[in-house]
Length: 332
Image 1 (cartoon, one colour):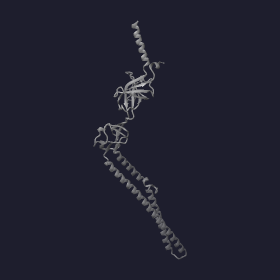
Image 2 (image 1 turned 180 degrees about the horizontal axis):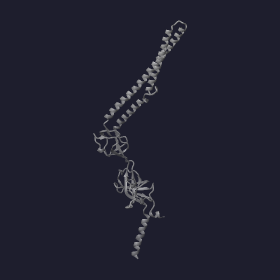
Image 3 (image 1 turned 135 degrees about the vertical axis):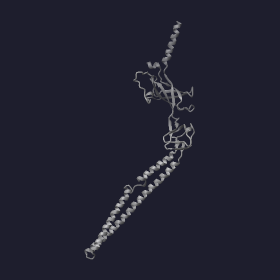
């Protein structure tokens, strides 16, 4: 009897433990993640100074290293000279308009004088006091004055056309000046970009490989900044373990670097696809030698910050999600 009851009790006890278990879904396939931002230069040049040390915490806007600014200072001086020349050109065009307008006023004045002389000569000729030759001379003078007025008007039109057809246009709105301003802004930007600064706050890494005299090309990653203020855990659960995991459930995290220490957080999101679906060449399962493999999906876990136990990108972790439901609850 005893030999029957003991195994039976053990079986019942084991069954009870198994049925009432399963509330916590645990995996050690989990890692700390923090955003990483590549550091690169927008302009080319040789490094003349490195301002930070490896693993130094920097704030956004902190200078990281400087490129040789001399080529960009020269380009800036050239752009300033080109801008001054463009503005001077507009000033000269305005002066040309004023000169043309003055010539038109003078030509119109002479035309008025010639018209009055013609009227007097015609009146004298009608009275027989003046000769026809004098009237003809006055007539030729009127035609000449009228031609001069037309030429002066064409001169004004040409001068205004050189200003783009709008003599009231602001100097810096003139196309040539706008182009020169754009080139100057580009030169100023390039000079400013010779100082490479941190785009975000965080811990700077890989700057130990930067050396004075090293040539940097635009867009090439030369260092990284880890935004350690934004931290989460990515836990890779088997698809068979996701049945009761829900967003918002409490999570307990143990970091391998801090054994025995518990961090707390919550389920933030559940991956929309398995890792194999994001592979460069997804697995082809419609083959004759197919073998079923349990897939994993990423569960993103937010963690409460703990200054006493700083987390670093890539650290290993063990994650336990409190689903609030045992195996017995699932059977009900």
